[in-house]
Length: 91
Image (cartoon, rainbow, N blue to C red; front, side, top):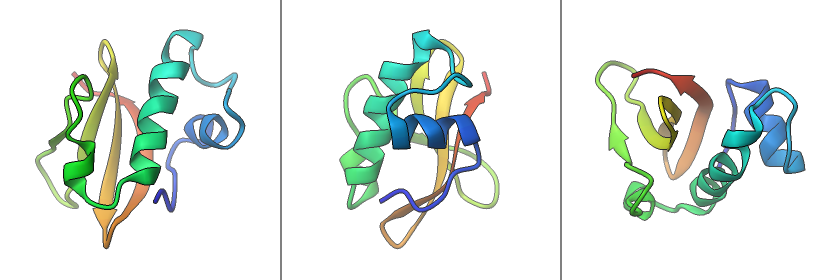
């Protein structure tokens, strides 16, 4: 379950199904990944073709789901919950 967001636009997209703060070309793909992240009970639930799920280096431990181009949804995972969910351009 998603417990917290870093990105206000991503939180708005998750709660309302749309956001003016996130490009139209990213919204449907990001929303699918947010729904999967909210439903996930374990990290293995996110290993879906097309999501390119992987862990990131550094501390605290963060994970990534590919959205489109250089855009990824990143998050921390603690006791079955996603924390500090963010939309980043990190490649």
